[in-house]
Image (cartoon, rainbow, N blue to C red; front, top):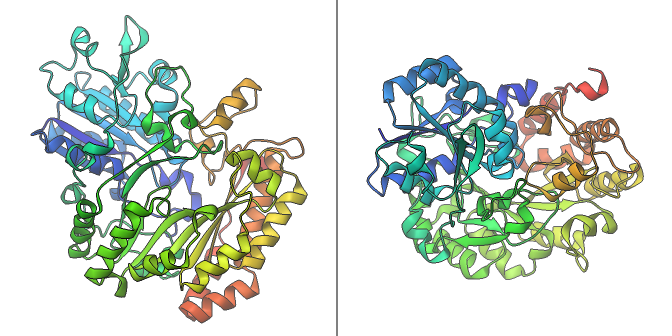
Length: 510
C-alpha cells in the first residue's frame, strides 16, 4: 500500500458523558477525498477510521503493520471547526505508538491545526516525519512518486510540506490548491467503499441528534458531503479557510486565505446517488455556505428533486442569515429534500455581530429570515456564540432571549474560542491571553476548555452561561411542546433525558 489515511479517535475524551450516545460520528471527509484523489492517480490507498471503530492506539499499530503502507497520513479535521485542533491529541498518541513500534515507518499529518501552526507542530510533535501545509492534494501526489520518503534532499523539492532539517523545522515552497477548473478531475469524489462498517455500509456513523428528529434509530446510516470547499467571508472566529493556505508564515490566519471552489452539479450529484444506493437517508451537506452561489446550488437542487430524494431523505445545509433572500430559492431547497438549514445567527446584539463579521448582517432582520425559512417548511438549527469580543452578560442574555423567542427546533451555542488559524487566535497571542495548554482545551465541550475572556467576562463566566443556557433552552416548555407536535412524544422524552447529562468543567471547579 502506498498510503494509509488515518482518522484519529478523540470524541470520547472531549464530549465526556455525551460521547457514548449523543455526539455525532461523522464520515471523515478529507480522508475520503484524499484517498479517492490519490487512487485516481494509480496509488494504492486505504482508510483507517479509528474514531468510527473506537480503536485503541495498539489496535491502530496492529492495522498499520498489516497494511504495511509506505506512508501513514493522519487526517485531522472533524465535525466542528474546533475539531482540527481537538483531535490532535488522538493523532499524537497514535503516531507516537506507531513510531515506537516501527521507527522506519514514515508518518505524516494534514489538518487545520498543522496548517495553522506548522513550525510549532514540527518542533513539538516529533512523532510526525512530515506535515502538509494546505489541503495536500498535489503534495501527496508528488511525494508518493518518490522512491525514498526518507531522502531529505528529494523531500526539499516537494512543494507544500514541512519536516525537520538538521533538527530544525523546515518548510518547502508553498503548493497550490486544486483550482476551480480542476475540481472534478483532481478531487474526483469520495472513497466511500474504503470506510469500515459493522453490518451494512456507513452503519458506524451517526448524525447529530436533532438532525435525526431526536430519534436514535434515524441517525444511521449517515454521511456528510461537501459540494464546495472554503468560504468567501472573513469572520474573525473562524479558521475554516486554512485549507487554502498559500504562504509559509509562522502563524496562519484563515481570513487571509478566503475563497470558494465548487464541484460541478452534474459531477457531485453522482456522489449523492452513491450514498442513496448505500442506504443513506440522513445526510449532511457540509459546505460552509451552501446557500450562497445560485449558479451551483440551484442546479444541484433541481437534480436532487428530479431523483425524488426529497421524499424520504433528511438533509441539512449551512447558510448565513444574510444569504437567505429569496422565497423561490427556499422552495427549491425544500423540494430537493433539504429539510433543515443551519443558520449562523451568532449574537442578538448588532454591535457584537459587526465586530466579528466585517460589516455583515447590517441590514438583515433575523426574525424575518427565520419566519421565511419556517414558511418554506424548513426547520432551523440555530447557531449562537457566547463571549465574543465586546460581549457582556447583558448581551449574552439578549442572545438567549432572542433564541427563546425564535424557538427553532434545534439549538446550538458555543463559547467563543481563539481557535488556531482564526484571527481571534492571532490577536489573543498578541495580547498574551491565557490560551489552552492542551489540544482538548480548544474544544467547546471538553472538561478543560478555556474560551476567550472579554473586557467584562471571565472564561468561567462564559462557560457557566453557555451551559446554563443549553439547559434553559432544552427545558423551555414552548420548545418541548413544539418538538412534540412535530416529531412526537418520544422525541420530547429523548430531549428531556439528554438534558439531564451535565458537562463537567474545570473552570467551574467540577
